[in-house]
Length: 117
Picture 1 (cartoon, one colour):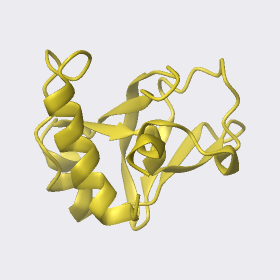
Picture 2 (cartoon, rainbow, N blue to C red):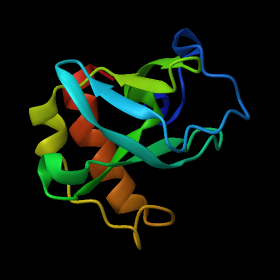
Picture 3 (cartoon, rainbow, N blue to C red):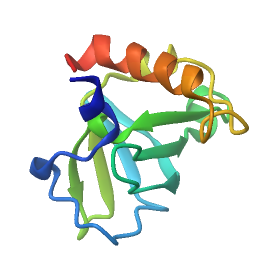
Picture 4 (cartoon, helix red, strand yellow):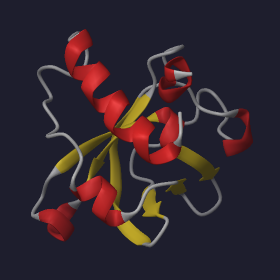
């Protein structure tokens, strides 16, 4: 089921073509930041979240499979992870996330353990 990690579930109410950049991101236990980048590539979708001062300006890569709801009216994305799970995630590497299969596999494996994909 690892292929589902990088795709938005139909249950999220995400509509292809909707820009998520700037949306607030809510973990299961509170606010974690704002979407800095988002893609909707088939089987390769993700959001990059700027956590701001919450974890000292760290950016994190969240596969689309971690998104449980997109609320366009509230400009909010909800993910099924806790703040600690996100804080402990693999280091975001903006130079590796697009084309490095090993890096993507590492990120997918980490989040898959937490959300059961």
